[in-house]
Length: 165
Image (cartoon, rainbow, N blue to C red; front, top):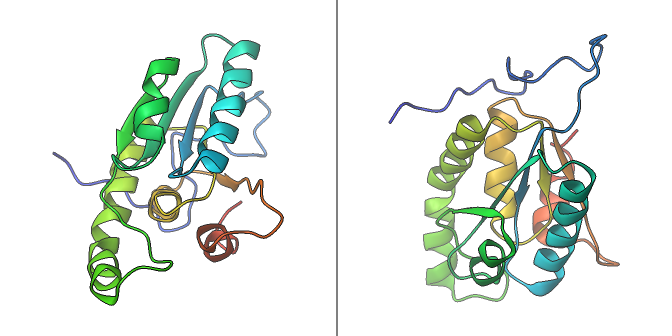
């Protein structure tokens, strides 16, 4: 397996420049995050609408095996790839230490997934898997946005806000 192509904040070569005269459509959309219904249902609704508007559009979800996305996304006809990460809010100290130790590995997992899929945009929807995947994709040079359906942003979206497009 080849290492991901990290662009460290520069635009990935596969993504057209925003100044480009060609019309760039969202051909491939990567949704990162999940865990709970608030994150997953909102992302699925958006993915379904994007697919309805253009049936040829490719959608990929990235989450965890433990989150709601593991049971919901694939039966609805979307691809799902998983990363290895745990939560940080309200967990035992030992679990938080393990999660923080795994974080660099999970960021690289996110960069590899983004590099393989080559998305037009990465959509962070919140939840603990959102952070490393959006950050990994961003380091690989892909544009990213965040969607926050709650009145108060969660930790992942608060931490990612300064890094997204």
